[in-house]
Image (cartoon, rainbow, N blue to C red; front, side, top):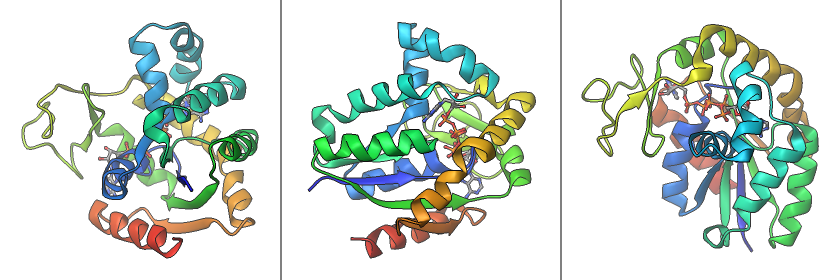
Length: 218
Ligand code: AP5
């Protein structure tokens, strides 16, 4: 049976940072809805054009567009053993849609690690984030600096600051998270799938706790 892990947490909680590490350790494909949208923006596709305004304002892209995009990604051959989902689902309607689509892929959500981080920490994290252009590796100027400023440690590509990490957009992303995504904490807790992890710990400690929660669920 295919394995599906859903990483839940507010913007800047460390979902992308942890997903890259855990996906590699578990041999799972990392499927990030935000990265999929950003690839479409870069490629100036129709989907990218539809998503751009929502992303720049820090709002959620409508459910129908997002669900179709993720379903298409999960259908691909490399996801046959499952996936580590990062940033999806983000609304109860997306969570319902995920449950339905996974039936077609011979799977179900196995565990939902929730990386808990308070708002004031998120603002500092997003303000200092630098992302690599080639593969999306994530750094922080204070908490996880690259060896050489502006250059990715892993692939040597340029580091950039995301358009939606500007203070006003960050504030809206956090507000939208509490209004529209935080209800998923109860959604998954009530199904016995939630595993809460303290996301204020150093990156390596958060990884340890996430790995322990995932292993326990197997
Ligand atoms: P998306 O790209 O998913 O952004 P997000 O959820 O806001 O999450 P981030 O990528 O900002 O944060 P993260 O939790 O991955 O943290 P990171 O590891 O980078 O979405 C962007 C937009 O796309 C949305 O606003 C929306 O418009 C659209 N979208 C995407 N999915 C959608 C969906 N399902 N439905 C509708 N619309 C959707 O870490 C942050 C920083 O902190 C880094 O600098 C990192 O180095 C640092 N850090 C990480 N962990 C630690 C730690 N433990 N200690 C100290 N620093 C740390």
